[in-house]
Image (cartoon, rainbow, N blue to C red):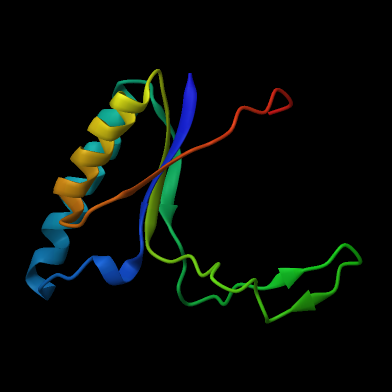
Length: 112
């Protein structure tokens, strides 16, 4: 089984205020479906109220992060047998969230 990251940047989700509770309920329903199917690993949303920092090997902390590495929005990590399955789950989340989802595959790490 392979782990997949399904995500979207916060600016991709453009909703009317009254639609937000519906999208939350529908996206949570997809997550509950993934849990029931035994493919859910973890997920959530990036806390936009807390700035990211870069931590060096010496423990130093810098407010400057790697260029282009800004991460916002929501994500789910699912463990699935095929990329086709991952595309299907990403489609379910895209429908629930009302925005396209990015799909990335984690490389296998025997130590994890």
